[in-house]
Length: 49
Image (cartoon, rainbow, N blue to C red; front, side, top):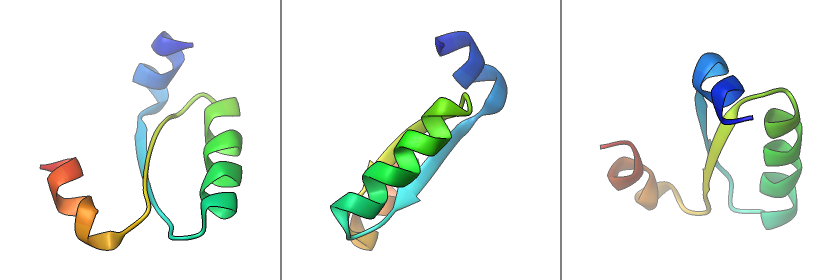
């Protein structure tokens, strides 16, 4: 699975609704992507920097 995530890439999900973020994470992970989710936009820049 880790090799798949490295090949497919890492997706940053910014979503303030936990249920939606979990659903997006589920689908992306199932399709082989690595996923990092944050709940608040102001947390995004430190996450990607």
